[in-house]
Image 1 (spheres, rainbow over the protein chains, first blue to last red):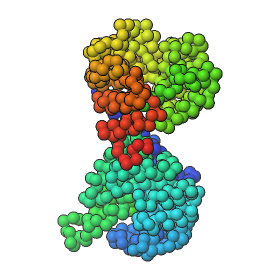
Image 2 (cartoon, chains in turn cyan, green; image 1 turned 180 degrees about the horizontal axis):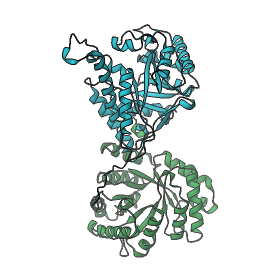
Image 3 (tube, rainbow over the protein chains, first blue to last red; image 1 turned 90 degrees about the horizontal axis):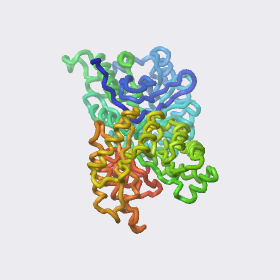
Image 4 (cartoon, rainbow over the protein chains, first blue to last red; image 1 turned 180 degrees about the vertical axis):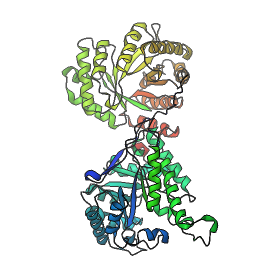
Length: 313
Length: 263
């Protein structure tokens, strides 16, 4: 008897979300099967990767990572253009970390100017991220949304504490939205419901389950992502159908394995390789859990993950 | 659980009038209200429709799907009208359901081939010429006949929705438990489990008006516990829909969120 490949059947599919404008716009999501199981259902888009750039020089990044961008990181527009032109970035994620009250506390208007400068320098899609201070993000993201009007950006992150303002801003300027909840599948669903009840189209939401680094809670993120995806595909739960984004770099490049010098940890091998491996491995884990979009920092880690994606699709 | 909205029905005066006058307004309004209230499918009951039933079914299917983007459950005993409805049905939002075949030979021989021909879902009522068997075991025997006919017509088992038939509790109290038992037994007739459906409101026929919603709701919860897949109900009864959504949560069929009732 001939071998028949056992196939799972699915009742729902992930929403497809387009980010950016023009020929370099990127579509994410749309899959009707679990990750990399294209023989079971349509998988119209590969997972996408965005390079992270920041509005202020990344003084807090490990030195090996700072060195990669040392010639461009003083100017966000230059940095973004470098990622697009030299590194082949498919998308850019601009993190307005300098607006955080505990950092440079930059004003919302200054952040808006940075957004404009970056947008003028690139034609790939832009993700605009606040500093993860819910209160300040509400102001900063409003100005950023206005500044980016017409470019169909992905704005983040709307959280329980500030979603009303962030949703209103994204809606007014026609952007897509990242909705993030604290590593809890039921809260993720609740936030999506609240956002759609404001009149925001569910097809414009991207879910951030809240990421974590390998060795530092990745299994929690993984399991929340699995449950979100299972709700979308098996239970056809429309509120859980948005594609998922993982903010990988910010969680990886602060753990000790990416920073500890070889002198302190001789058995761990060269610190530069370690960081790259840590970021790539963390990202791969998220892809297996159903990630549609990764925000990453190191070009070599990105290349490794791209090789994996191309090998599996 | 799939809610099949029952309100587009020739029995109610306003809907009957609209069907006769080919007046889209009241029918489309009822369709939209039901979908917004939680119906995932709409029953379209045009009755026996002996005179120009095919024309009426064609018109009403198109009329409803113009505004309600859900599949329809076509409810008529007229085979010509049934076929016209299946032809007119837009499958973009899911396949049509035939309501219904049964163990009665003539009906089974007419309706089951239509399900095969149009690749539609079909309800199998477990009754025959002698009526509704008292015992769940005997309803299973009729289910087996329906399933046999389906195999003959190329209709997959997962496209059949077996209906144990609900009897009014005021007149035959012992039957309410028997229908619950039948749901459990139907599920075991095949692997994967057979799907099931009921016309729910019959449970409270003959009971005082004030009691009917309560009887309907509690009985629905009991049937759902045994794995009921779908029910033909009035989705405009808010509390009934709330019970269904809540049982789905408690049984792990949908993911909990504080606002689950609003979705």
